[in-house]
Amino acid sequence: MKAIVQRVKNAGVTVDNTSISSIGSGLLVLLGVGKGDEEKDADYLVDKIIHLRVFEDDQGKMNLSLKDVRGELLVVSQFTLLGDCRKGRRPSFTAAAPPDDAQRLYTYFTKKASEAGIMVKTGQFQANMDVSLVNQGPVTLMLESKPKV
Image (cartoon, rainbow, N blue to C red; front, side):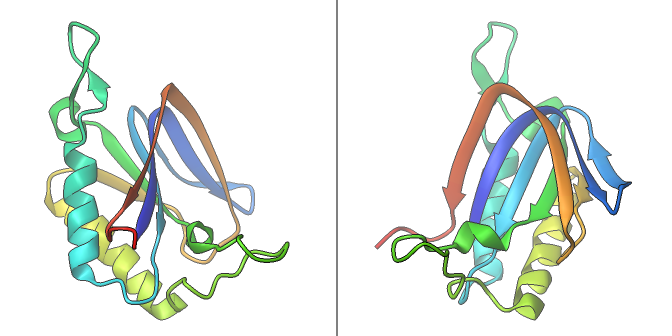
């Protein structure tokens, strides 16, 4: 499982010119589910993301987590994070999980974050979405549930 995590002032998702979700201050997570990913991968990333100390404290240091600041989480499914561009000109998405598996783990991820006390909003799985954000900092991090081999 891969995630791009961005600290945002606000973010939102639009489908067919209709706003389907938005958040204020918090984190936007673009989440990619790969073949072979399991619930333990989602558990690891949820825990890591909601406890990442990427929000500033009173001294301006990044010492506070999403939980500490009671920020919101917008999770958008992004299978293209699994794209392999090393060969040829067109990305290969063979490492991405099949849609049914990806949707199950995407839903599991959002449920676990919600159960941890986070206000969670989502994109629309398998939709052509317009994602807007105001990246604060900017702070953008790449996370993976499995070590690189």
